[in-house]
Image 1: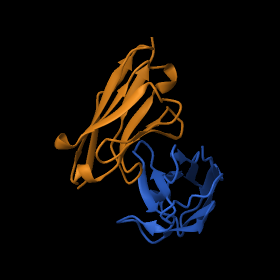
Image 2: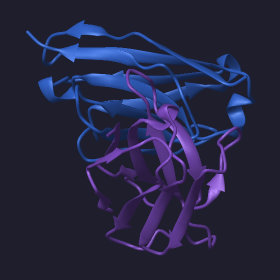
Image 3: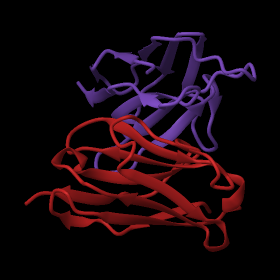
Length: 114
Length: 112
């Protein structure tokens, strides 16, 4: 059974940093592109980042480019999202998603507030 | 960026009715490999999204055949036949052909 379990969320002040983790199991992690998708409270879905199987290629929307970094450790079947210079508009539930859509974690809440 | 226009924003249905949701993209979603990476997701209340259909018309494992997806290029439709209570929630279309990947704004399916 495919499982994706996010961790690392919480309350953080504007301008600070936070790192999210996603532990994957039930599939060969190194064979799949992985992504982070977020959902602001009562809002729709917004893609945040994608990483290739080896980690050599990464993709971001303009809204987070230069502030967020996606990475992975295939030996640990883990995905990460380093979030720097956080803004209030980054407040959302962050989901780890295999190939961007096919399996999703339960999500982790990030609140950016002073 | 590819804009995904999803309509209607909400639908009120009776159990057993059939409904359709439209999703139109601002650009063709056909990738260089000839495949169209348009997908449909359902987010039930308080839950994570779950993919129902991938690449326009392919049902994910365990998804009943009451669900069907059609379309091509820039115009796509999700049809749900004989709606059941467990089908309620917010439906999203999503494209992964182009970066940035983008989602429709969602269609909330509610009971009449």
